[in-house]
Every structure is written in structure tokens, then in C-alpha cells.
Image (cartoon, rainbow over all chains, first blue to last red; front, top):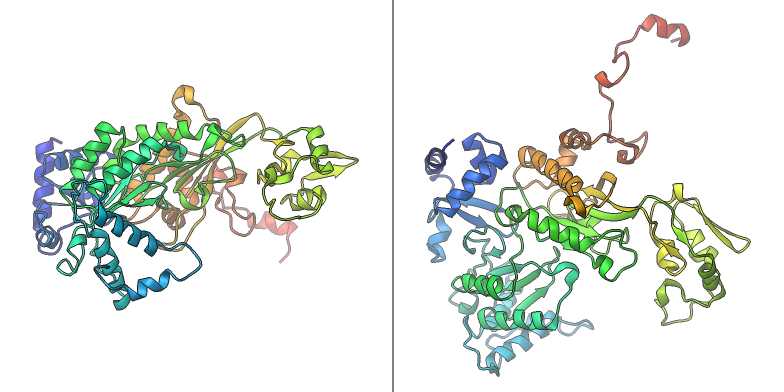
Length: 79
Length: 439
């Protein structure tokens, strides 16, 4: 799969779910790509590097989201 | 005068033990005085406001910290934990109060120069409050603002040869004991293995893709000074295959009182004459030692490497020469589903730096592949082992079952035979059976 195709799949799927949630587990993303975790990680790392996705961390758990989405980014003036 | 009144916190200072409240007050005064004339990059009253919000939390019986955040340094999905306060107007100094996790040096070997550098950086760009060390073992710098994060990271990575540690669903900062650098019990070079795996698995440390946290800990011997068996998803505990080395003359010297037992520890009071029978032989968990006719013997086949006799008489007894390590998996503290101790996965593996620890890395990666695919979100390895069974992990990792994998023979075995492994399968000729076994 090309990076652009993977990116399109992820962005499309995440936007569809934006009404109900803005943060996603890594397994959600590898599920969207229908890939094994290690393979999916290469594409997802690149998407973070390119600013398509951003990390969110509670300290114990990490999640991914589209930049600027969700309540927190605005509330903390981090968007 | 303090910015906020803290009557509830003040009570904590009245006990007989050292109080973190006193430490915080001391730091608040130090920041206010700013004797070094630093251009403080975050609010000068950050510690005052921290005391204020903590007092309010005690008063309300609820936290005033929000949960997590999106902050970090470029390219890293761990090492920084966003912390925001839900009373930013009342406590502006801690409106942003992010945590930075920093990889501690192997064996926690610090130089005073390094510690000064670290504290100077944190006085300038953070609150000055540190946690040395967190339960994972890393350096925790508590309290800074978002604009300072990249500055701190630049200073550490460019001028201190220092990396951030792990947080979130990452490989956490690996932790090791002091090892062969100072300890004659160490059965392998913990610092070399810890460093090697840290460098090998940089991507796992900094870019989260695990279901949850994962911890490596390295103990040079079964004394387990970094408590790997209780806290690490994968613990590497040194051991030996051959016999405990006995110096008969030194044994006699212990018995005769010429050498103090336990390396001279517990010396604050008179415990009476050293009694080898009571203090060593009688405490051996497998009863594999004898002291008869002034001679100590050990049935090494029965020894479980508990270390007690070696700890008690370190000049007389030494670890064997054929050293290596055991790999245990699945330990965790009780956040979800209760605490678990590690389960033995690899009873003994030679530690071979010459081939870049390939045997160990093979085990690590096969465990990760299984957990990453089958683990649920926020499920630790130990919980997956409980849910799917130890046998499933053996299949996933390609490790053959051995007697050491059986937890309790006949009552709670981990390992079950499958039909294809049993000659003749599960079917049998009932008539032939009944010839020898009446109803």
C-alpha cells in the first residue's frame, strides 16, 4: 500500500467517527489499514511526522487523533 | 508569607518522617529569593500554586488535574505527559504543569556534574521539583509549560547526551541494577544488556504502538534489587547452571566468628554468636545444605538460587561459573486486574554480547508480536497471559514447554496435552480398557 492511500483511509475513517470520538487507539488505526501492527506502524509514524496525526497521552496510555480535533486542544490553547 | 494558606498540608509535616510538604515549601522560598538571578522561564510562584491546589484537592477530596494532553517534543510519542489544572485562574502558576520523563543512567551511576546540569536546567525551565526516581526507575521532572518542552529537549539531547524516557503505550525506560560494575553477585553485565536493548528498541521507546505500557528490568542475580520479578512485563534475572563455589576455610571463619555474616550488616546490636545451622542451613528453602563435621555441602541439583546463603556468607559462597539469565514475563502492579508476579518463560539463556544478544532479542520480539496482535487496548502482557493462557504464549513464541513452566503440578498446570501430541489420541477401545478396569 502506498503512503498516500494509507493516509486517505485513515483520515477518512477518523473524520467519519469525529462526532463520537476524537482519540483513537493504535489498534483502531491498524484495523482501519487492515495490517499487522508492526507493518501499520511504519505508515502511522510517517503520518505523525507529516502532521496528519498527532499523539495524545494520558501518561499511561497513548492515543492518536487528527490535529486540532476534540475538546482539549482548544481548551488548553494548544491548537 | 505563603501565597496560599495550607492548614491540611501543614498537618502532614507534623509526623516523625520527612515530609514532601516541607521540601515544597523550601523550594518555593528558594524560587522566590532566586539568589542565582536566573531568568526563570516559568512562573516564579509555581511551587506556591502547587501547594495551593494540593490543599484544595485535600479540602474537596477530588483532584484538580485534568487527564493527559497532546504535548510532546517533535517525533516523540512519549517522555512528556501533559498536565493541566482545572483552576487556572486561582492557580495560574500551575495552569500548565507538564511532566518530563528522562532516561536515567544505567545502574543510576550519576556524576555530581551531571546532576548539577540537570538541576540547573530544571530550575531555569521548570519548577525545580524532581522525583528521583519514579517507580519505573526514570528521572521525573515535574512541572513545566508547553513552550519550554522543545528547549528542554534540545538542551538535553545536544549538551547533556541525554534522551527522554518512555511513557504511555511505549516501551518504558528500561531499568537495571548496578550489576558487575560493583556487585560480585551479578551473573551478567546488566548495564550492557540494558543499554543494548534500549538502543535497539528506540522506535518502541519513543513511538507508541503497543496496547499499553511495557517494562524491561534487568537484575544481575535473584536478589532482584530492581524488583524486576514484581514490576516488569519482561524481567531478565541473572543465574547460574553449575555449583555454588564454596571456600571451606572462609566457612570456618564465619563459624568461628572471624568474619561477620551478611557483610557486617545488622551490626547495630548484638545478635549473639553466628549460628550457621540456624541462620543458613535451617533457612534454606529446599533443605539442600548440610553442615556436618565442620564441612559445608550443597546438593546443587535442589538449589533454587534463592541467594540467602550467599548473602549471609559472601566470602565463603560464590555464584557458579556458568552464568546466564532467566526471562520472566507478565509482572505488573495492581492498576487493572490485581498485581501479578512474573512467570518463568525461559529458564536459562546464555548472555552473549558477541552476537548482539540475538537469543534474547528473538524472545522479546516474538512476545511483542503476540501481544501487539492479540492484546486488547490497555491490556498488560500479564493479563493477556491470564486471558489466553500461558500455553498460548508458548505457541506464539515457539518455546517448547519444560517442567519449569508448570506452576503447580497436578493442581494448576499451565501446560495441557493436545490430542495430536498423545499417541492414539483421545479415542480408546473401551472394551479393551474394561478388561482391566471393572465398573
